[in-house]
Image (cartoon, rainbow over all chains, first blue to last red; front, side):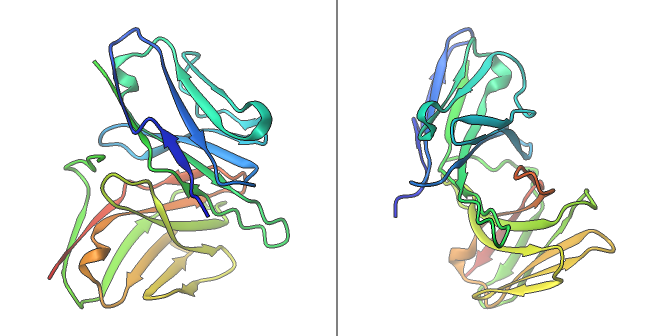
Length: 117
Length: 111
């Protein structure tokens, strides 16, 4: 079974440019999450999709960040315009909620390293 | 790969030793806890989880202990191997599916 995949693995852009990150969750996983880790800090939650709907976007830092999951499959995270403080590693995770047990193990992708110069 | 930074707590052990990695969590309402392992250039990899109605859970070579009284979680790795070298994160879930991660501990295993 293929795991969570993310594209690109690395992106280097200049301040003010736009970047779009993509995440393909594990097939059949309705839940998709975006997290971010900036240098020296903890991994922080950004938002959570259930299928195509945003369940929780409380972690999105500001309106320069836009996440979409049209059709409930893959997701994109766009940063426009990018700022220096947006540099970090962006992780995507997906999960299959098992209603009977209540567990919701999140499986992570390899991340996209974003560098804003 | 991702740099894990120079400010992580580090645990250095010899191959074959047992390792104990500790984590303090903050939210007394958290009901589900997970340990992740992150190797350089990869995303966090699920190791083991535990629900708040348990105080111990065992997997293959790993054991997680939960002490709700002092909000403490630990990961024990038996017979540590060089391949166990990585950064280990604990994460807590308050029931709304979002994970709150700890800072991480770097485990270095010497052959």
